[in-house]
Structure formats: structure tokens, C-alpha cells
Length: 285
Image (cartoon, rainbow, N blue to C red; front, top):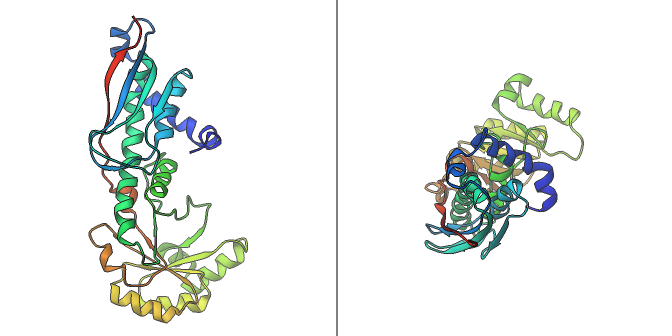
């Protein structure tokens, strides 16, 4: 993430996380460090994976003390290995101790998402199908989690409800029909917005095509039904499939031929990547 993105969209979220962790003081650190003392600590990876969120990790310490310096030996998107020294943090030992947990929480979470995303994206390599995330993100963590998906080789679906039109089953129910929902969306939305609609059977596929949807999401269909749907659509709309897509079952979808596969599991089910800060020591007497 660049400096502008940090200042406009990220800093306040990091500050909220720090305020959650330090309501008045870090009583443990203050007990053993009564005054400022310069030190350094190692950033070590404890398992193999893809690293993501280094700039966010650094920002935690810089927001606590702008004099903190971080030196990285890897970049976002790099493969990292168990035991690898990924960087060092230099500064007031009190800052290094107080910011440690929040900084690692971000880095572990984002790296876990990037790692899991890369594993699934690799399974789609050469298929022509793009892997998408969803809005199934942790509250107040969306900007971090969707960034991690990109680092892992995935692509972002709409960022939020203002970012695109996706007519799901309840929207269709509210409008009265697929045809009516698409008609109302076209009437209301700016012409630059694509209209995507979720369908669950072949009758709905036919209606969505005839209504002029730009993207048709095939939700919870079997691979055989999706193939029939794609034949029915015949290039008149882009296609996306969704519904409990995970690393374990995506192989069944690779040959279907959809343009996009969306997976909420990228952000709601990826495990963290184990990372730690070790070997803290003073650099001055």
C-alpha cells in the first residue's frame, strides 16, 4: 500500500486497533522500561507461505513513534520459509513492545489470506478463469483483506455496496422478478455500471439473458448444470460461479469454463501465517 492510501484509508483503522489494545497504557512494558531506550528486534517467519502486509506492519510502529525504522529483506508477494529472517525493527524498545501484537495481527492475517489465495489461484493457472474474493470480510478489515487477496494472485470483486450492482435472490424477491430487477437497475444505475445477477437454475439463466444482464452468477449449481448454463448464455453475458468454493473442491470447477470463480473462503476461512518478533535487545547502554 502506498503512502496516500495509508493516510486516507488505513491510518485511522490502525489507530483504532492500537486504542483497542492500549486503553490507557501498556502497563507491562511500562513496568520494565521506565524510560526510552533504543533497541532492535527480528521479524521471523515460522512457517512457509506468502507474505503480505509489510507496509501495514511498519505503519503500526511509525504511528506510535515516527522515529521507528523498519528494514525488510522480503517484499509483499514473496514466498517465505519457516525460520526465515524477514526484517528488523529499530526504535524505542517501549514502542517495539507495545506495537508488537497489533503489528503481527495484521501481518499474520494478511499473509494467511495471501497464502491461501495463492494455493487456489495456482489450481486455476492456465484455465482462463479469474479467482475473485467477496464481501465476506472481517468488519473494519476489508481494505487489508482484499489487498492480501491481490497479493496472493486473486482479484477483487466489488469493494462495497456502492461499488457495483449485484442483484441477489432477495433483491429479485423485492423487485418481483429477474426481468423487473434488471430493468429497474438499468433505469437507476449510471451507464458505466455493469449489472450482475445471481441465478440458481436454468430457467433463471434464460430470463437473466433475455433481460440483458451483463454478468450472470451461477450460484450453487452442479458443474454439469453450469456447463448447460454457459451453453445457454452463449457469450451474451460474462459468467461467474459461486457457492462454498474452497481449495478442496475448486478442481471440479476448473473445466466448467466460467469467466470468474468467487470464493468467500479466501477471506473468511484462511488460517493465519505464523510469524513472530524475536531476539529483542537494547542497542545502547
